Image (cartoon, rainbow, N blue to C red; front, top):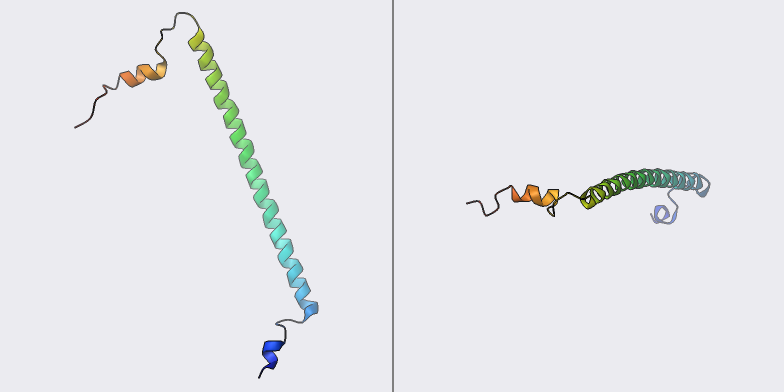
Length: 86
């Protein structure tokens, strides 16, 4: 009756194959995850460079003479009417 509790689930020569397979699957999943995260970081960096370029262009156009002191954002915000909606 105690023999099944003391015996391993698989003989050790067969269990090693499954352990190695589990490690292979883990490493493959880890590499795929890292590749996905690297692609995501590259996309975010590209978008951040685009936003920085847009901000730089906006900064240069605001510094040009003849533009009032009001920024485009403030002009559009002021046209909403302000106040509270009841």
